[in-house]
Length: 177
Image 1: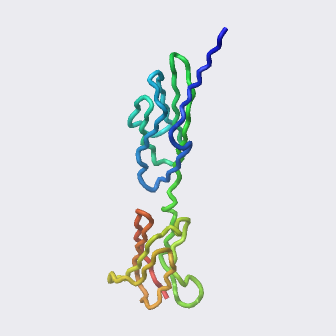
Image 2: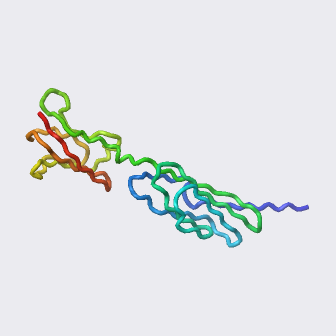
Image 3: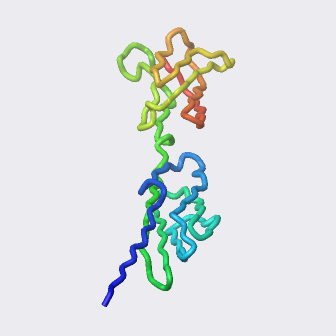
């Protein structure tokens, strides 16, 4: 008696896990396994929209919701079940929105609240910031999150513009003495 053993391998042609953040639109992703005309392919996606499913290729638009999602594919060949390959995709919370913009500061020499500086987990990722007075004149500019001491500036309302990657933030600052 002869025993035949067939091993059907379905390696994904990509890493076993992907990670995105929900700061920007997550692009459609294409997943593909090795192709054989004798196999039938069965795809399963835990979330997201399947854009195209064509034998050994799948295109998915992942949601922007935080979570871990799974994609898997299994095959049959000549009526026999094959292996299943799995892949996980993790969507993390956008760290760029984790910024704290104080709305005022008091550079009056009492050693409390002397400088204006942005706080939060993503504050180290600031690539440009500028501060303008009420007449639109730039009074401060930096290529990172540097503290502004407000020297030589009048009491009043100022506007700060901050750039993080492709995100721009504009806030008001009140300088009080």
